[in-house]
Image 1 (spheres, helix red, strand yellow):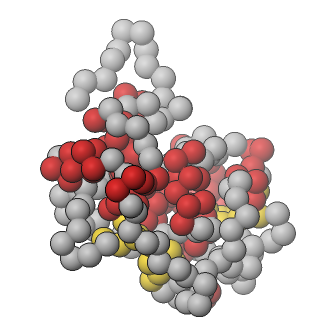
Image 2 (tube, helix red, strand yellow):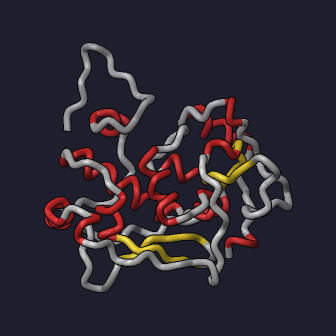
Length: 220
């Protein structure tokens, strides 16, 4: 359960994470205390998981689309599961690849908010609902006990944690709130979940920290 989860991230692993994913000193990343839980972050701090960067293809500062999704569904960043974060980045990457404008309405056409062991998730709206992936995301192991604190301003929303009483299921979007042609195309041209290489993320305009030599261009 999320309320009992403690981090086992080491200082050396945090140093590697900060260097690899360009986590700036200005957000003051630091290890959690020995008895700290995710929910009892120090004042002015918020939790981020190492796999948020390593698997879900995110960076600091946060993607505006991710912030828009979390604002719409009222999800605190620290309560967001990595599998759920990956669903958001996967949708964003598909839209970039196919040249579609990112909209919360199109994303919500595929996903409904849910909760699993305290973490916020997204599920299919029904057993027969559209999906834009070729198979379910493989279960990641040990992602939820590798986290650190960063300054809370990284997450520019004031969103409380959900419990079973405060979680409100998102209603199905109306036809005016999503583009049926875009959603149908994404469902007809799905892709697997995966950890993408930096050249690819650069190519589709997501990575801000990969620079190409003038004599080198990525091919896919």
